Image 1 (tube, rainbow, N blue to C red):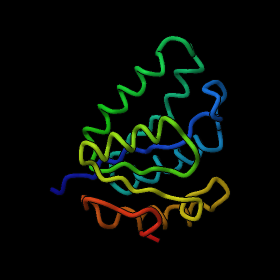
Image 2 (cartoon, rainbow, N blue to C red):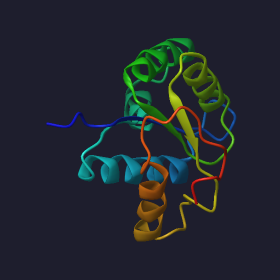
Image 3 (cartoon, rainbow, N blue to C red):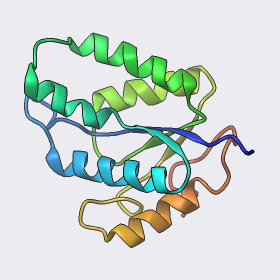
Length: 142
């Protein structure tokens, strides 16, 4: 049996202030997460931790979340970087490259909150058609 592709979903979670959440970006990440499950992948979506933040925002410090994310990335075959500014996602992707995990960077032409699920999924499928390659150039998988 073929080993499933483990995909870490990296992208914007907050509005840059570390306080308020960008629910549009979280919705896109969640849609990508569900799509990848249905494609037979094992996705890891840190955006779902937003629910932990709603319960108690001060329970887990930011640095601890980043440490956990690096541990998840270590287990993955690739990181899918969703569009949008994010200090945390930039750190995650730099770490992934450092440890040799493939990073696929999507731009707003590939994945967007206003895009239909069908188009977004088509673009994601194209992005992961060649799994386990060592490097992708931003936007080269369209």
